[in-house]
Amino acid sequence: MDVFGELDSNVDKIKAEFFVEIFASGNSVKIVGQEEDVKKVLEVFNALEVLSKKDTVKPQQLSTVIDCVKSGEKFDVSDLLSTVAVTARGKIVRAKTFGQKKYVDAIKKNNIVFGVGPAGTGKTYLAVALAVSAMKNHEVDRIILTRPAVEAGEKLGFLPGDLSEKVDPYLRPLFDALQEMMGEDNYLRHIESGKIEIAPLAYMRGRTLSNSFIILDEAQNTTKEQMKMFLTRMGDNSRIVVTGDVTQIDLPHNVESGMKNALEVLKDVDGIKIVNLTAKDVVRHELVTRIIHAYEAYESRT
Image 1 (spheres, helix red, strand yellow):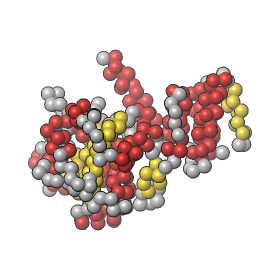
Image 2 (cartoon, rainbow, N blue to C red):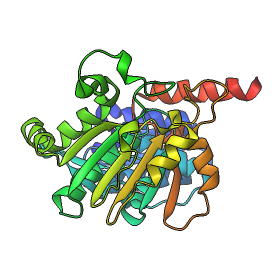
Image 3 (cartoon, rainbow, N blue to C red):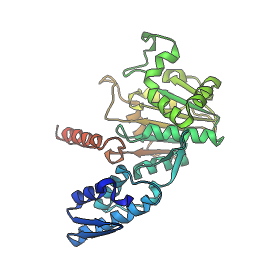
Image 4 (spheres, rainbow, N blue to C red):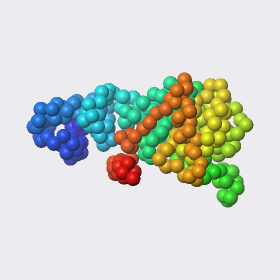
């Protein structure tokens, strides 16, 4: 039974989290423990049963369900089953956590969305997936990807090569996501036709970006002036997604992050949505989540 996991791995994790004994046999399960814990474990198993009807239950899904049940948070497990996009190889992309689902919904419903959170929460990947879907559905004509090219300013002249070669290393995560979503040949064709544009943030100045899905990645490393310039490039029928991690700012200490400033200035502006992702939304190896928690605990003590 997929609910139990390979070699009952899901059962072992649930036992460790709720301090109960679980006896699984065939499609039946017996739970022994405190009444409150047994109720919570039943809630977890019921959610996993719903998930298993669509696909194999993923470790991240199990962790997400356990976190919600332990905290008493209300959740709809079907939110983890809705399709966000389909890759070139036919793989279905879904939100893996409820935080990711909130982020996806925000992008679909708002003109400008800030996705704020630690590495591994899917901020960039999901934004690219939704951008490709929007272009496939003829909701926009092109995708524009941009990012501060170097940590403390866009000093591209010191890098070797032409503009594309200078920017390429900084936008590699975006390239990889685009190729997965579109396939390499289709991706290259769109690059050549100009339907996908990749440019450093400095090259956005003076432009009006219409009929576009625009993604600004690593936005914590923008200055206030750069952020204001970027956001005011927005033209008709465009969407903007700004992603970043405000705990990973590489600007000089005397320079305020444009993203941190924008989150405060724009928090009450209609049409702009801020979604905060947390360690609970990390979808890399679960050790990454523990690392993030350890750093958060350490920083809170210092």
